[in-house]
Image (cartoon, rainbow, N blue to C red; front, side, top):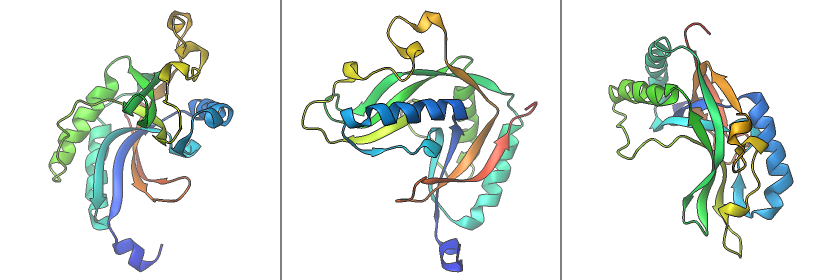
Length: 202
């Protein structure tokens, strides 16, 4: 990175990553079904994540103090389990702006992490969002089909997320860290890890 780029604000957010196994499952699903659902933009395999808090444009020199505070937060947590849920959309049902996979927060670990992170970031001037926290994994953006999008026609990401099959098993993973991402628009993958924050006992 050259000096000029270092001086530019970084577009930052804090997130939880998916397990490699789940990223592979989602990538295979996309390869099999992308042609059926004409979204303008599909998430790159390495960019799958669950946003904890979006910070926006941040001066590079502020990153060390933000990272230090997030490290303090990480030491307050032990690893917790998340589950992979069903598909959903944001925007209109017929032409959604975001197509996503749901997240099951079995022990409220993610909700507690989001609360602690947003509390910590308030001291740096990053305001909490007024809307409720809705954790999800973005699969695609900006539906551009000629026909109305029908969520009911979307094949399940995994057998366990199909209707009435939840009792047969669950797809889950253990979260033992969260990360600070920087966004590089128009690149693939689009997100770069600046810092990782391991939880205690992990």
